[in-house]
Image (cartoon, rainbow, N blue to C red; front, side, top):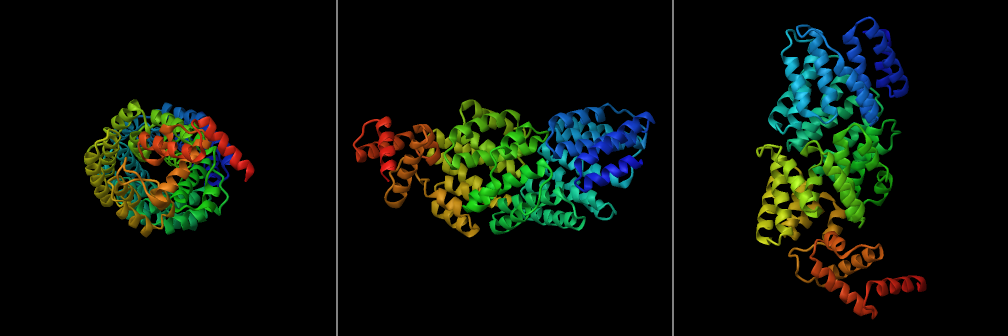
Length: 494
C-alpha cells in the first residue's frame, strides 16, 4: 500500500473527509503514473465510498467511471479485487444487474485474491442477490462473509460487513436477528471510535427495532444518534428518516423537532444513494400525509416512484402508491413489486397489503379484508410488527390493532387510529366523530380538497361531504368561502 493511500484511508476512517479525498486523489494520480492499477483501484474505491456517504452524485459518478475504466489481465489476482470494487460502486449507484455481471466476471478470473477480498466478495454477492430479490442467497453469502471477517484483524471491514448483513436480515424478514447483528456493528464502531459510522449504525439499528415493534429501544438508539455531531450527509439523512418514523409512531414531539428537516428529501433525491432516496421518500411521504400536507406527499410520491431501482428501496412507498396514487402510479408500484419472486417473504407481505389497498379503493370490502388478513399474518412471520398492526387495522380489526399499538408504545399510531374506521361508509358517533370533524375543519383551513380530506381520514368522499354539510349548518353558511370567513372571524374574536 502506498503512503498517500494509507494516509488517505486513515483520514477517511477518522471522519476527515476533505483531507482524505485530497490524499486519495493524489494516490490515484501517483498510482496511474506508475501503472500500479490495484493501488489506483483501492484509492478510487475509497473515493467512491466517501462520495456516496456524502450523497454527492457528481463525484460518485466521476470516481465510479474512473474505476470502471481500469482494466487488468483477467488471469491476475489483482483483477479479481478490481472487479469487486467495480461491482461495489455499481451496486451503490442502484444498478444491481450490472453489478451481478461484474461479479460474474470476477468469478471467471483465474486466481482469487486474498481472504479479506474474498470475504468482501461474499458480502457483496449477498447484497446483489438481495437487491434482485434472492433473500436466501443474500443471507447465505452475507453470513459467510461476516464469519470470515470475524476471524480477520481488519475491524473496519468487519463493521461494513455487519452493516450489510444486518440489512440483509431485515429485508428478508428476520428483524430480531437483524437487530442483534446491528448491535454488534454499533459495538465495533464504538470500539474503533468511528464517527459517522457509529451514527449510521445507531440509526440502522433503530430502524430495525422500529419495524420489530421495540419502540422504546428504537427511541433510545436514535436518541444516542442525535447526541452526536454528524459530519456525513448519508448518516444525517438516515438519522433523520429513522427519527421521523419513530417520532410519528410514538407521538414524540421532542424527537420530531430534532429529526424533521425540510431539506432531507431534496438532499436524498439529489444524492448518489438510490436506496436512501427511496427510504426517505417512504418515511417523509407518510409524515406529510399524517400532518395533512397532501400536496407535498403527492409530489414526493410521484418523484420517488420514478427512480426506485428495487422494491426494497421503498416498500411502504409502494403501499402509499396503492393507497393514494393515480391508476398509473398503482400500476407502476405493482410492476416494480413483480420484479421480486413471490417466495420473497417481505415482497409476499407487501403484495397482499397492496392488493388489499387496491380492493378497498374499488369498494371490494370483503376482498380487502381477506388480503389484509393475509398481509397481517405474513408481516408477523417477517417480524415486521408495525406493519402487521397496520394490516390488522386495514382488515377492520381495530381492537386488535389498538392492542398491538398499545403493546409497542405506539401512541402516535393509536391517535391516528381514532381517525380511521372499521367499516368505511358507516357514520361515526361520539368522540371519534368529533375528532374527525375537527380534522376536517383544520384541513379546510389549510386549503385541502374533499379528496385530500377523504384520503387523510380513510373515508369516502360522500362521508366528507356529509360532515362538511354538518359544519356548514352549525355556522349558518352555504359555501366554503363563507365557512373560511366564519373561521377567521372566530379566530380573531378569540
